[in-house]
Image (cartoon, rainbow, N blue to C red; front, side, top):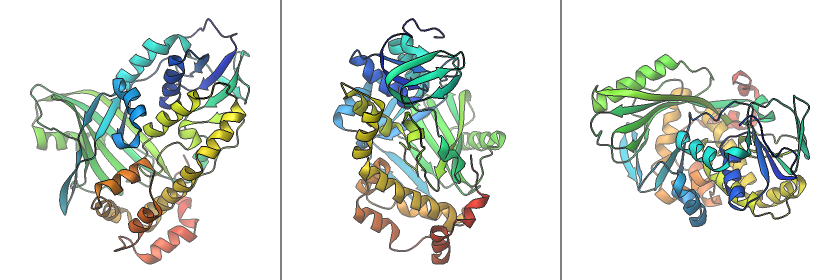
Length: 389
């Protein structure tokens, strides 16, 4: 909605940006009857994304709360590499943004202020380009990546097509990675989700050194893959695409408001998954009966000490992936990773790697040359050619 009837209220929370992190937080706050508002630049919430996660990423309470929003879930998934195929009994689920944002509009639509140009965000208020100031006890800014965007990054870029078939396609579980396809731009795989018995979401994903997406090339590859696997009788229901930053370094943004979502570093640096972090933060934020920007910032810093350490390890892995591995050989790193035990893989995705896990991943048969590994860790000159997006 463009106008909000309660702009002069004493808001507990002012949420800047209507993405996944803030919408989940708002849904949790709405359950408690809290006073909040979401401020969004766009005129409407755009249903062009799919968020996936492992069920083990969440607590039983978090999963029960999220369950009504889940589009589809499965008892496990398959990975395919040239040397092996493997089924992993790791329960997995996805949420399509079309259904998610319909739910958001229905439940908290009256709390969303759209089509707003934001001039200044402080720890106490948000000033719009119109001159209007919206004040709150806790100001949360979740508008994508901020200052970190000026640092070098690798890219996980993809184009996805939602495919509708006239007959059941027969795929019972996701193909999380099919890396038997030709390798392009680095590590490339096809990702396929059976959303229902006649619908597949198929994504061509590439861990690349460049941000440019040649959509026609991606789409041709997807259609050829679908033709080869399921025949030619289908139609394209929708398209989605993105270039997710896989950061090589991280710098917390110095800002007055509280940074959450991607802006606050609440995502997995190597996989790009963000939903589990958004759910955890929604529960955490809503637990404060007397919130303030500074109080929540201090509480999150205390809670996140372990995660900040974990994040440094994943950034280290990213530098190994993009700096040590020759692009055509990045597949070796992923192929080796998926030979580990399911519990090990689960802890990696959830960002809860133990010290033993970290050591096991690095030692053994190295999939990259030692000389290039050392260069990726102790030199920054190789990052200069990477996007700063």
